Image (cartoon, rainbow, N blue to C red; front, side):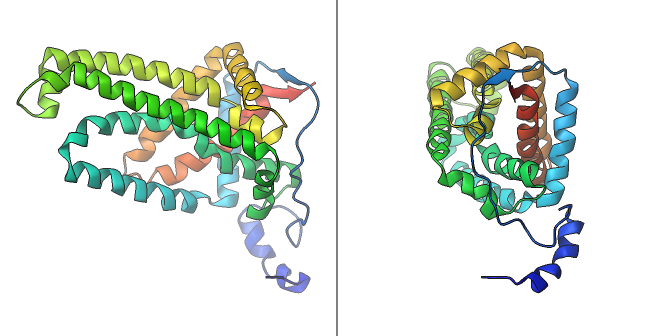
Length: 284
């Protein structure tokens, strides 16, 4: 569908209300080209997180990407709930699956980061402009990085299943939650599960700290992306752990009101991840 210049002016007030600055119509150039030049790791303080979150909120207000999140979250939540109701044998996997969402959480930042990248370059962004990045060769790196985190999530579920079978799975009788907190095998599973889950989370955090943003922004192989993201995380340990805490807190708080809050926290964190990336890495 083609919109004339006169017709596009009618939408200007709406665009300004959403926070889009400036022009009467959206820019026609999509700027999917990759950034160039050597990359250097910066060492910002913890204030970089609050600044990135503020800019993430501004992007969320401009794009209102909460609608996209609702379309994805609720069907998945309903499918998980239905599975547990139909087969109680799936109950031990509810917590590992819910906790494991954080492992694949960086994948959810791809679209939001693409929008924030486009808005940073042009002052505004459209879905078509942001999506142009995925028509470039960088799409392959994004896909492989996503598969890596999905594989990490699958490995976590396998490890959680093995741990359950070796501990609480051997306890006969009683309810799942009663055995979890009132028996020695249940306590062992709880402690080891938390420790193993924390280990998986740290690996995912190191890979995803700036991994997807790098894959969107630069022509790099998945090995280069992972290596640079891990080096960035190790060079900024305190900030990386603090960001991981912010992500977990955002997901937990967003989940409390019947998952409704995730429609806000997920987009805000996704947009903020781009702005944090820009503070952690720079071209020399």
